[in-house]
Length: 572
Image (cartoon, rainbow, N blue to C red; front, top):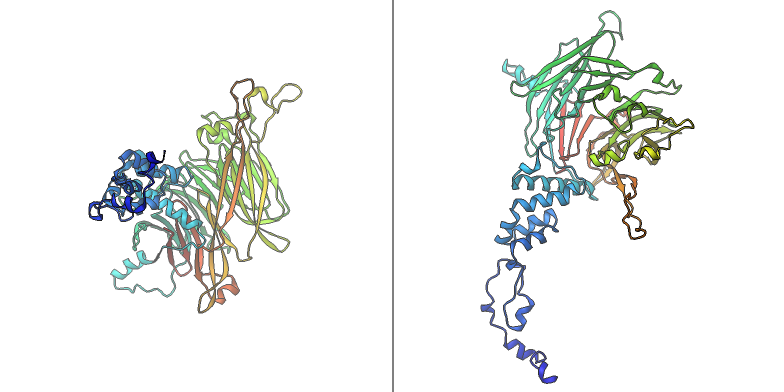
């Protein structure tokens, strides 16, 4: 036996003599690829570079997005493989879509995009998510422009100066959905609405359209359509003050505008007048505008106007104004200062569609809340078609800023959908066999987060990322100063399905468990962005930044200020 294994148990010197000289190793395309172990026994071995393309593609599918770019720089072979469309299509699915990260870019079919377009989207989405979730998030780019530039440019042609002693403050700033964060709507002064184009990687702003109302008109509210495919882009309401009576109005008007980018203007689609105010505007969703208090619905395409029944309005001794509203699967969710109201409006919103449960079994819900809120946001977590068939409602998260007992808190309420049960298992049958109406969800307060009294400007994006602004002390190596800091948070909902129970009698389980919903609320410790303020602003609580907006798909923040400037902050 010793003689049979003696060649493999020879001394190191004899094995080293079998190795070819270093000049015979050949040249490797990558400095990180060393000769393989098989060279020790005197025969050339197979390196990663010699693997076929299908094996390399399988390995790259487990590599992160940023690592694919780094791998590209090591050799020409990896550069050629990393430019394949399949690589970035698989990376976009694995690292972005499967992780429920929104895909940036203009709406369209991902199958029609090139390899370069898929790469840009995958890198942008991944880097934004990494920066947002990092321990030290940073603003990658800041750009500022003056909203009075358009008006001053016309005046300067006649010889006037571009400098204004009293610039018009910015009261509203909004992102246009479906524009990849590049179109921004601003309201400056009391009567000027402007649409700006700010490219993602640019340092300039361009005017797309502008509308200036007469001087005696005061813009009272504005709302942008959340449906990017809708023809109506913007709902604007304004009032004409009474010339004789202080504090009263002469008339109120609401108009629906369409953006004509070719001619650079806003086009009025429909309008409505009233001797009363139409404000506040709570939201524009497709063809429906939710406005005023008591809550009203305006179908701007058909011109129909509905006011909710006074019997649906809860008379509360505490302040009970409307904070925000949202349509969720045939229901209207109304968040007031002291209660939450859910109303079924299926017959009004979509009478031609069929829902589960049937409309005659749909009922509303009411929840009274302790404390009085002064701001609220709603996040609807979208479901797939298969999941909508299993659940009566979409999971919804509600954040409210509440002052209670001298303390300021952010309180989260979760609307947990109820499962759709077969008719044979319907628990809502009474003694006579009639089916009783069931609410589509359960209200469950889940978490309370203390905040500073300076907390304001609570905003949230469509994908669950949001911001609020509060005053903090920022310390550097040389000084400490107060600043208005934007604190980020995430609202997510996840369907947790338990493993199926073991089969009995050798048969497969036909009805696995539906699972349960898990809601998460994560607050980032470090601020996303900070703007230094003076002690006079802190003492009076009258800060320079008046309004803000967040585009949580591409990672862009817009800030409007009292000095007539808009600052755009890119997180990627």
